Length: 324
Image 1 (cartoon, rainbow, N blue to C red):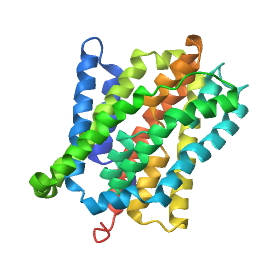
Image 2 (cartoon, helix red, strand yellow; image 1 turned 60 degrees about the horizontal axis):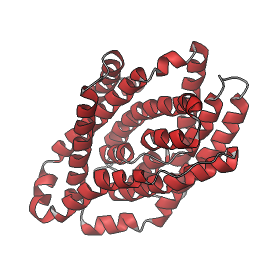
Image 3 (cartoon, rainbow, N blue to C red; image 1 turned 90 degrees about the horizontal axis):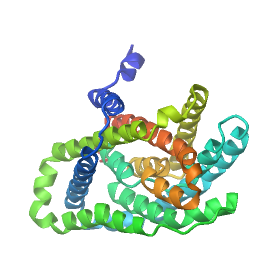
């Protein structure tokens, strides 16, 4: 009975599923899309402003110089994932529709996400400072490494979209730094109102989930796949994510990381960025191929949001208050 009670979804999981259903049935269209993007960007900026206000200078410095954690995340993103992607893509070339197997490899070469990795780490009471440094570094390095790795594996040419670095700085780092410098004025208030930060965390996740599922509908994700391809991709995405989550959890514990560090490693090392994946794909591949290439990325992106949101709530429920 206790096991069954643990399987019962909490309110946030139910909200996630409801949001995904609403995004699929009532996606944002037309003039609502720019407005939704502004709301999402604003909620993320507020989130990182509050995170900056809550974290002490010592915590941030320790997170930035935590080289073992950053190397572990780097190994997951740019070594473990590419190996798995190369094996899976070659095994599925004769099974999936043309271009989709290549999309699976491309998915595995992408950098980690920033906003969701850090948001889930915060939601799970993990090492937020280390997650910010690790996820940001992964995303910036990915701007260079993803095209290079893709060129190495597939002999694909193309230029590197450096403009994505500016959006990372503007959306993530600037609010975080501003919040940290405002810590002397609002730090105490932010500590006393942790429920507000949690509300912003969950609100940002729900907005991203709604937008992601809506974009899938608008871009015809579900119409471009045959039922067979969709089932294979769903199973593949779930297996791929589960493998990486299990491997990174085991590696974190084997290497002696703390629970907070483990949380940051698991969430930063298991994500793949749709925001970086789409513009890079549009440059690396011919226009006729882009749709098939990004299909696995779009599907994996939505699965990782739901699975990791549930995992974050599980971590938060199991975290020893004394260690936090």
